[in-house]
Image 1 (cartoon, rainbow, N blue to C red):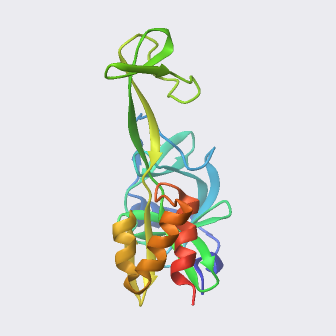
Image 2: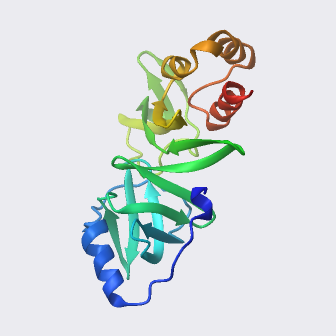
Length: 224
């Protein structure tokens, strides 16, 4: 049975909610940090516990700080313990815990799923000089105001940041969960198709920082 078809019983009592909070959430108020959210807004979702109890509220993922967040009234809380969680459904998307992280299930073929731990990291671009110029050592370039964080100061000398993808991917292979993040770790999973995969990477200019490129590679790797 796929995770997306997991039967979801209805929570019928406050006792289930208390059990959920005690056994699963270990909830703590989320610290005030600048997040990058996977969803545009906190989205209706369901957490299914291993005992098949459920809780429904609004969820989001801060993929900059690797936090799974939920709404408790007007307060944003962080879920810190996934040991009793079976499945998380947010909107139309399905996630499962692996270790201390949540991975989204992406169907590649009817027989194969790609799991994605979404993450973005800071990417320093240089210092902001006068007249909105980006300074790299002794060179400068024009700075697109839509490309850098609007929270940065307008004063000269401020470091300019954008963010880049640094997802972690997973596949279930022969009953084992195997992960990869780059070309080297990916090719190790498919030694029999290394040459074909390297050719695809080179000829199609595929990048592991691009989610769609990773999907393309996995489709090549798992084809019969």
